[in-house]
Amino acid sequence: MKAPRKMFRCIVAAAGLCAASMLAQAQFVGDLVLEPAGCTQTGKCRIKNKLRFTDSNKLVWETYDSESTDGATIPPIFQPIVGKPFEESFLKAAIIHDHYCVRHVRTWRATHRVFYEGLIDQGVPQSKAKLMYYAVYLGGPKWVTLIPGTACGGNCVKSFTASDGKPVIRYREADYATVTSASELAALEQELQANPEGISLEDLEKRAQLKRPDDFYYRNGDQVRMKNLAVAE
Image 1 (spheres, rainbow, N blue to C red):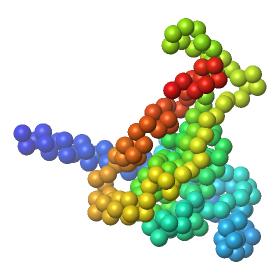
Image 2 (image 1 turned 180 degrees about the vertical axis):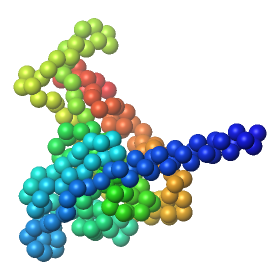
Image 3 (image 1 turned 90 degrees about the horizontal axis):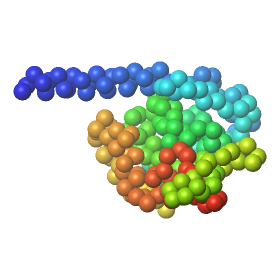
């Protein structure tokens, strides 16, 4: 029985190296320059040049020139644990994340995951990156595309394109304070620091879902069918 166990450990180790290699290929391009000088003190900055990030799936995420930013969205109660909004080590990841959280051109799950990859690329320790990922997965903004439809019998909906050709988005703003606490994040921080490899991103996602078992966004995928302009839940 020893040989199979050894082989299993090798497979697990190889999988870990493969995942690490994929993340290593994710990277930012370009320097981050904020304007005007001293804007981090006021919390009102502009990005001088566009910021571009290629994730581990080779998807490209990009901001605009002169886009405004107020840094990472970190409630004051969590700043002693996570850091200040304009902390250099995670600012690039926060700017990309915020850009796509507003525009909804990719799914909320993919948008939060790219935040984690951006943190790793910028050298944020895995334990802290996972802590921040858990926070945004739990309390960060979420959205789904609602597909308009007409009823055609029991459990039947005929979908059609909205009259203006635009998707209908159901969206929820970020809400960290009511779903987690500084003590919970501090405890998770200690757990992750003790064994950062032992808790996967999927484990953190499950923890978040257990805290909100009836949550509409956790229960549904990226698209939800509507029936008579009401969301079918």
